[in-house]
Image (cartoon, rainbow, N blue to C red; front, side, top):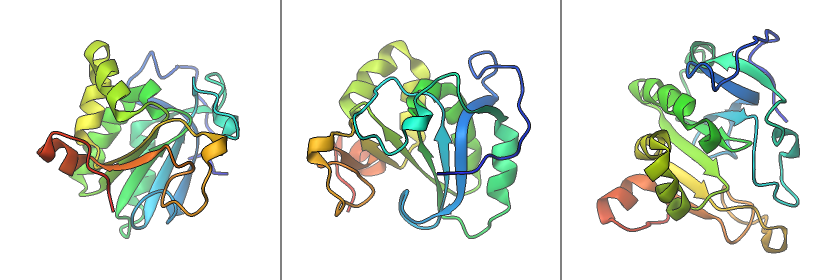
Length: 184
């Protein structure tokens, strides 16, 4: 699926240090994980357990490896042709604080941000009431693919999505309109 940033592992968990993320791996150049050439980051840990998940090896919260945000930024900075970075998983919203801090640094570099989440946009807005970093992360994202993967609704013809129930949301237009606006 993806590669690690490097082989180094640390003993700190992402919950003890918001400057680290628990990752499953990365894809340094992707054209299938969002618009344009992207750096895709696959986080480790997912509570959804969707049947037929594309990345089931990312479900275990104890799997993967810890990686500093600085190390991710160094890897991203090596490719000046990137249009953006995609947070995938696993479930990135389970590590919203770390992805928020990473996202702020990526935005400073002029990169757009996309995130996949098994929760719907509306569910994430509710979560943000108790988990402020979910709201902060949503605020800096440009695109969101939301909703659980549903095997019975699998459709390989969809852009950046796996099942028909999932939405590809333009979050900048959504914030402007005050209602969900789908990306084209």
